[in-house]
Structure formats: structure tokens, C-alpha cells
Image (cartoon, rainbow, N blue to C red):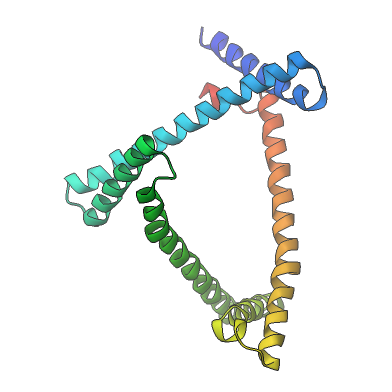
Length: 212
């Protein structure tokens, strides 16, 4: 019985994947309609999975920490309060409600900016540690590029009109718009190839996450 269920789920997953792929290669109304239905149901299931993940995070992690007065329970209580406030107001009045926008502008955006600033500092510190431990050519290049980008992004360089400020600004743009963009595109190509390989493994029933 268990083997039959696995075969059924595998056949359903393979059929759904093939129908969605056919909708991108053939302009047939029936195939396009089936693809649209499958994509809509997949988005609904993804939204439900996201909601369950958020509920699990709030309930099993933060609420448990508040009840047990564990370390960091005050921060967990703030997370729960603002999560419920944002969720309820968003469901009642929509995401464009003024209070929801204020939460986003004055809470989420400053936190994200702080995390990005910490990430930049962490990258510089990691580069320094690499230079101290290994002292390779690539380590020196990484550290130098990170320092140049940080200096080129500073306020006195961005607002300055001197020769050094302009030179550092051009170097920062050259590093970020050419080298960084090329690296990010390479990473995206690798992610796309990995996604294609994973999809093919699921279509061929090599990997069966739906049967776990």
C-alpha cells in the first residue's frame, strides 16, 4: 500500500511538471489553461506553507521563549506583538494602510539597513582575517576591493567634488557595476542550473520530497 502511494504521488508530480513545461513550449489553449490552474494552486500552497512557517516560528520559538522567560524573551514578545499587529491590520485594511506602512518604514527598513551595515563590516573583518591567516593574492584583492567600495560609498566621497573623491567614486562604480555584477550573474546562472537539475530529478522521480 505504501509503495502504491509513492507511485501515485510520483506520477502526480511528474504529470504536473510535464504539463507546466508543455505550457511554455506549446501555444495550445487547453495546455495553457491547465498550466494556469496548476500555477495558481502552487501559489496558494506556497502561501499556506509560508503562513504555517510563520505560525510555527512565532508559536514554537518566540511564544515558548516568552512563556518560559528564557533568554531574550523581551525581544520575542516584541516580535509577537508587532507580528500580530501587522498581520491583523494588513488583513483588515490591506498592505497600503498607513499604520502598516509606518511599521515598514520605521521598523523593518532601519533593521534591514543595520543588518546590511553589519554585513559590510563582517566582510571587511573576514577579509582581514584571511589576509592574516593565508596572505594570498586573492585575499589581498578581496580586502582591497572591499575597502575601496566602502570608502567610495562614504558621504564625503559621494558629496565631494575633488579629484580624489571623483577617482574613488569611479573606482567604486567600476568595481560594483562590472566585477560585482559579473559575479552575481555567474551566481544566478549557477542557481538557475541547480534549479533545473533539481526539477529534472523530481520529474524523473530520482528525488521524491513529496513522498517523505
